[in-house]
Length: 512
Image (tube, rainbow, N blue to C red; front, side, top):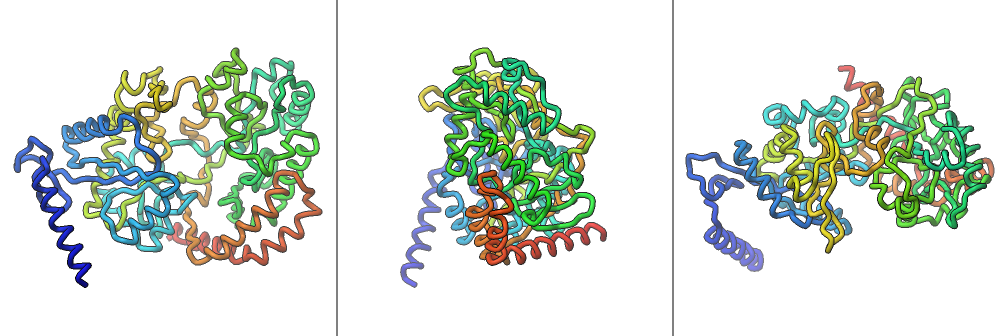
């Protein structure tokens, strides 16, 4: 008790001391007035934004400019960002939430720790009314599927980051410069792609063979030919849950015909030497090195980096030397979810409206967006056309002077893409696909808190038994029976049943 009393007295003394040394005058709880204002001026509340990563080099200068702009615009909010190193992120955030630390905005990555988990623990604030009152621009620039992805139980608990278009799948990027070199046409089917890839592999002149870049330990589906399947459109959520768009059926993906066909395609490519024989031990740094070296022909994804690195080995390559393959353009693209990334207001926030007001300001003009995301024009970045930019690099640190990650808080209506990246990547990922069909599960957020043990066990068995099959390293018919037995013993039926039950409840709530 004495120790607690001492700490309380110490904290009080420190607080009073800090107030005495500040250039601001205290007002109501969590409220300050900027230097140079009087009591008749607007009160300004601090929005403490907690996010992962490292501070930009010119962080303080740009943040001061952001706050000056918000003050001039009458937002009533002062931004204060707290960066947490990636290796400490989960641990630090859990401590901040469990100890009731006061902060106002938290970056949430649904594929790391879903929003529903935070909400189930009572850690996030329902901001439905705050969005209605303070978020007209947020609603204006986010389609319904984006806003729905930030809901739990029909209530808004976060603000989505609509930073990229997710509707283009399967993602297959091919090198046109290599097709021209070997006098090959652009493939119009998966079969033609396979034949072209074999010819390229046979004629390849470099030391490093252009295997399809894959990190085998992260591969659970080889879905390059999904659009040819009669069951399309469908989606596999969290690598486990198969949801059919037309029937609404939920199944374990590994027990579907689609999984079997995916594995057979992967096995065919593996046997033909198109998949690295060491794929299961291939690391992320090796994949990045392969992509940036240019020693590849087909990529199961999009290449969004500057092509400057590739130019070191392929000096004649241009931004237009990449194409995105869509073998069935007459079939609809499926937008599987709104977004995986969003920003939520912790229940400990003393000013829950602060985060909403800040992001609403961010989305209210291109000028505001450019300042927050890219910094000072001509100092931190240079505009390159209407929607492009070139970052100015700090040569000593080897990174941009200033940046804010689009995936955390960006929006397609305003984003400027880094210059010298492939034209097709910018077209596919950073423009809204108005013809896409929204998945029936796009707004559904799965709460796995009741099956954490089973889910962890299932993922352990997936890594051990599914990835070798999914990458084509082992034959499906030979290896799958044991893999399924391991998954069943780990509790995959309970995991899928829980997902299905919650999804049915979600669908029922939409009909009310």
